[in-house]
Image (cartoon, rainbow, N blue to C red; front, side, top):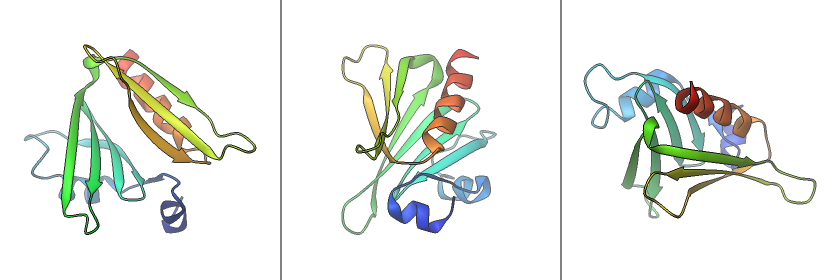
Length: 125
């Protein structure tokens, strides 16, 4: 996956070093990025301890919201793959104590399957 995939809304993997540098104020000492996926401007980041959802907001993208989710807080998750006419795939994550899931939309592609596998590994493994 490359730049074109990112521009089209498909998730693409991001260099661990690049993500570590951009999240240096968010990561705690010794915490390492295991894998990261970029969705246009947003990111889904897996570390050894938690899932970090990076939500870039506004026209300039200077405002950023970080959702830090310990894996033990995930009660369940689901993925819905893209179809023939419905080109969007969807990831939903339910957290303990929350009735409404966190939802991330992916464009057609295989990355949602990779994200689902990693989430299963960290939540269930």
